[in-house]
Length: 447
Image (cartoon, rainbow, N blue to C red):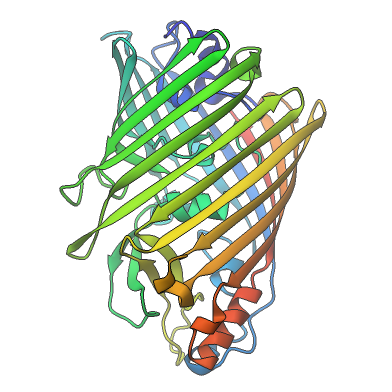
């Protein structure tokens, strides 16, 4: 098994390669090292990013939130600071070390990564340990990885953002369903069917602390892979769990390899995954489930991929009302909201593709849908998000590339008739219609 991955991991080891839309087995790439790997290899990348959101201050609000007229809603502000509609920031800045513990046993490898950029992982701290794991390759047909690392879920969440992501921002469905917010309850007035809380510490970044068994097998042109992980399901800033339940996440994948090897491999693959566990909110544990399936096709100059996801329980809904607090104003303070019970559901999907029309240029197009709170009990709270993303990439060199995206964003109130109060209904429609389009330009430099 290690020999099969030597070429792939030699080419991508340290992930110090330019973005070229890879057809790689990312579970193995991020969890293993080639047999001839060094004891340590320093690597990292930076992603300075400019973002501009085409948005006008809200107008026409009535009732208790009328005081927010003239303000920008939070989805029209650049995160994680949420202060301006445009910003230049060092979005990601990661430095890591990976290698093989030759002094102990070359069947043990490790992966450590620090994050110092401005994003959801570092929203409360300047520097966060985003990855820290060791992989043990003693059992035939199985590698065991332990520590903090990415969960084996959807492809968009699992892929390394600096070498295999062709856009600047994640889709709404991936961010909303898989990029977890750890919440603590607070008192306050929120819409019926939702609970109020505050987001604590880092967003998950699609990671958790646990133990994973995984491997990939090749037979002629076919490749089969699996991963099964038991994890805490708690905030990634804490080593310990906050309840007695563990999460289980499993993924199966199959690929047909057209030709090539390593980063230049061309294939079509399909995958399916499932995740379930419990989340503690106050003194009560609630069921949380996520699952999905998808595919990716890579051949010649063409890339096409897509995913569909479904989830129940612990559906994050953002702050209500969706504005920054105005100190001293006679307006209700915003409270983060979540739909706790597992009868609360959400679903979504995306389809995207790219075409490399010149050796250093690629055009990309993506459409994503996120239907949040689709169950009948939440008719008044359901919101549907649809986004077209038009993008392009310039591959300047082996280690540097630029990504430009323009997102045409639409938010709609799925069932306005379910909002009985006319003022609240009008406010909901105004806020949904006020969502602005987003332009992003990002440079990625790998070292």
